[in-house]
Image (tube, rainbow, N blue to C red; front, top):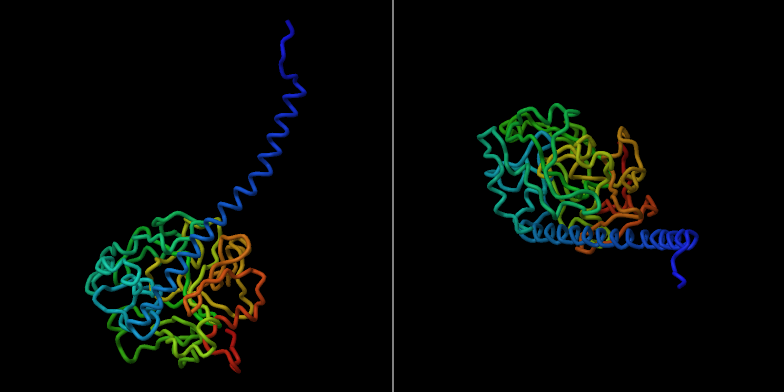
Length: 329
């Protein structure tokens, strides 16, 4: 009786065919996963954009940027110029997280601020990292020092930044005390980030102790960025060593939560720049391979290609660019 069986050659051919099929399927699977992550990210951006517009409807302006990176939110100081925390803190009631407002430090206390460690999925891009609070890096000693209103051993971080304008602005630490910041004699920075200089024409949506109103968007809400994805170094998604990703999601004005569209700072994919690039933390960007999600001031969300004309990207960061010469730092 003749027995049937695979020969070694037939087995090798079968293995080769299976390997080839797997090789053909993997890119399709990866593309489908990326499409899903990008869609979820776009939904996050959409919800943040709508929440920012709801804040505007309630307050008559978009959220202010806070006092500086030395500061975290104080729960008894409202959401105006007296609030040292950033725009994400002010937005909490409009993303169904109003109960978190009370977790911020009281302005008369100095201890831990539990809010700083509270992560939110709405601020996390699924293509980049999971939702969580990450340790503070030893690279920035000031992060571990006692702050005027609260401190933490680890902080929640965000993957999205509000439009800070068409000119980049250096990070600003802010005053050393609440009374100092409340004083009329304190010298707040201009939008160019130069302490003591007069306020220049504000071109973005949120900045140090200031924010735009819809009526000030002369170029049209659909032509102006509101909030979008920020650039990060993929080797440091969790370490806190990236200069634009070492603060808390709720911190006062800093490049962790504000990004800019200066003409020579087009958006780029994560990992396109060196970690020590001195301008990487000013840019918008993302972990998606071909572009990033950006919400406009009319609430719409568009996927912006990395190949976008730098001038167009620059102008969409300016609320009123018609005939305006944009100074560079």
